[in-house]
Amino acid sequence: MAFGRLERTQGPRPMSDINVTPLVDVMLVLVVIFIITAPLLASTIRLELPKTDAAKPVDARQFVTLVVDQTGQAFLNDKPVQSEELALSLSETARQNPDTEVQLRADAAVPYGRVVEVMGAAQKAGLNRIGFVAEAKPMTGP
Image (cartoon, rainbow, N blue to C red; front, side, top):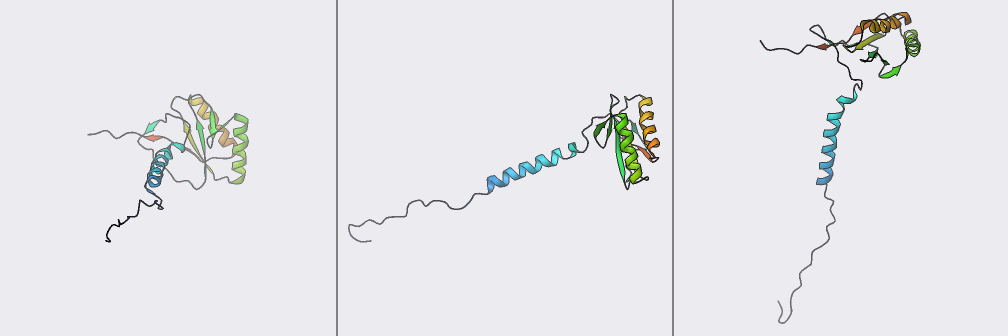
């Protein structure tokens, strides 16, 4: 230190590093939101499926989903279809692969006659493998 002379210290320097902590926080929140919403996108048609003890998921090689909601509206692969469109689409599917399975999901409130109409359309198109989708009954304690 010299006489009469003050030393100067460096002032605060600008920060040139990127702070990635907020970016990581936002990305983790987005991942959690995606994990929660992904199962909800599997089927958008609300149904009250009948419950049975024998309900087991079966892996089919090739299948189409046929849904009848509580109002009786038919959906083929989650797209609403009228009776004529349903017959044409099922006929085209049967022409491409006659071993295609029809996985029929019908709301418990749907009249049996409507379910039989939809089944008849599938069989008339040439699709004879029809699987009925139901939910397993909840296990009750002893």
